[in-house]
Image (cartoon, rainbow, N blue to C red):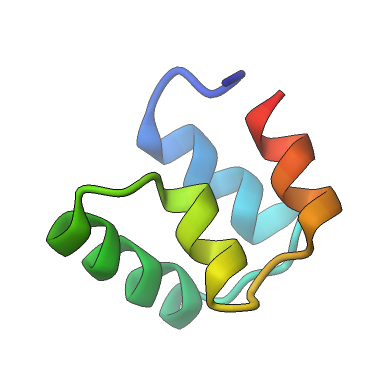
Length: 58
């Protein structure tokens, strides 16, 4: 993944993908509960497309 920390990823999600803070918080809470990767949860909730998921993970 090209993001060195969570803050960089969150900034990208907000600025480049126009996700709201609420969407990100939902996925962050779920990520902590399930110990799952944030990008995958964003996709599972329908907040990002599969193409955007690929962009995040490269």
